[in-house]
Amino acid sequence: MRHATPYPENVLPRTYDSQNCSVARALEVVGDRWTLLIIRSAFEGVRRFDDFQDDLGIARNVLTDRLTRLCDEGLLRRVRYQERPDRFEYRLTRKGVELWPAVMTLLLWGDRHYAPDGPPVIIGHRGCDGRLTARLTCDACGASLGPRDVEARPGPGA
Image 1 (tube, rainbow, N blue to C red):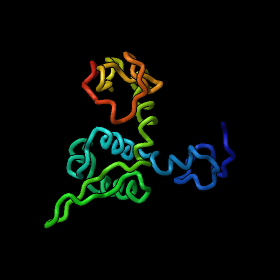
Image 2: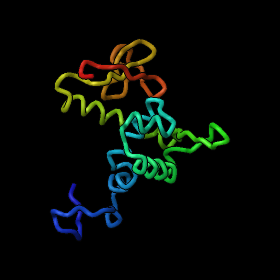
Image 3: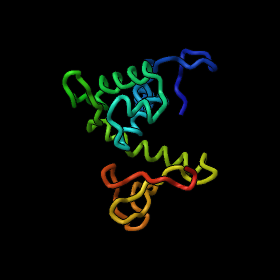
Image 4: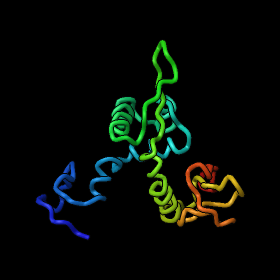
């Protein structure tokens, strides 16, 4: 689907305000590489600033910016876990958890097209050790799976 744009064909605008498109609006929030990787790490249980930084190798200023934006957009919430000094962790909100199907679909697509040695991570069903399918079900027992039903394990391409 092609949308009319006032921009030259080889120049992508910084925002998508002129487009009446839900994909464009969603990209305004999660269309940045670091943002999706932060969300992925949050699904894997990462919650604290230093742990995000260690997990991703991201610059502190970039991480601060993305975490602030994700909180402002309501995908993460900042929760104090220590006083003196104040320390916070970042937890997925319901809105953030709703990204799980999109993140898993992107992961499986990447496994099919960009993992020549096999998936680096296997998303397994905790209940029976089956694997996540593109339909977000377990390939062994057929159960519908959500973020609480699965765990990430090293795959052959790790």
